[in-house]
Length: 298
Image (cartoon, rainbow, N blue to C red; front, side, top):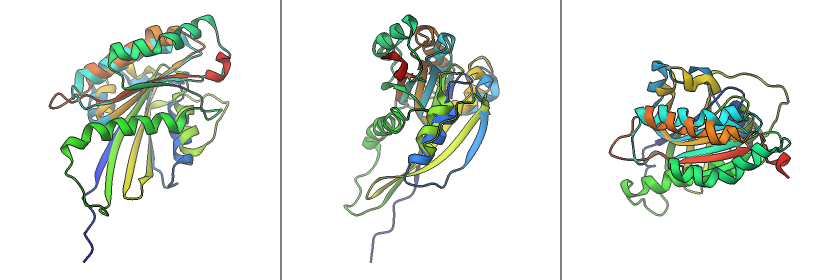
């Protein structure tokens, strides 16, 4: 008799960041490129950051994506706030987060050059597992960034997971956040990854967007990815703590064409994430820093 599949373990990944950074586009791009096209989306605005209700979202996430817009330095200023919001609620040592500097396809500036150059040190300081420069429009590092975050989340979870049989089927559900300042390209990054599409028309995320993507990670492993696109303004609201809840990973996005979005906003989003995320048993959530709009950097 065949061995029954193991119980499903969902990975919850929160996508947060200021409005207009490209969170929704990032999720939509992921949905289109992933193996399964069966998706579900829920809208939550980035302007909700800092609001008490959002703290519930920060709990029980496996990962978080903090996104900011490289073309808007102020969106990076808020990354630390998003980071602190999550960390205030979720203090798990296993919570992985990622910073995304979105809209790297836009023209570079002196500020964005500085942001890109300092991303690595900035992520190390805030405890981000990785960072990427992304472009939803040009489909740059969309799938790669999320895959990296998932790898970090699974790596952290492995010690607590019993060794499966060789042919045993496994399913996980991860909550990943995409956070960052507004207009850093968070939504565009998500859209590029989930749907492989890019819209030049800017649409402000209201609260947050949720995309659910089924991924055939390997022949025996299926990942149900819950990507939360957190509106750029959410860091200043009370809802971020709710959005950050139970995140397994995080992408923090900033705009490399607007260096201040890295030096100021991204750090604040990370700090917001750290402060509001309810982390259990000293587990950290992996975070990746993404510098978006890289095309305009060269």
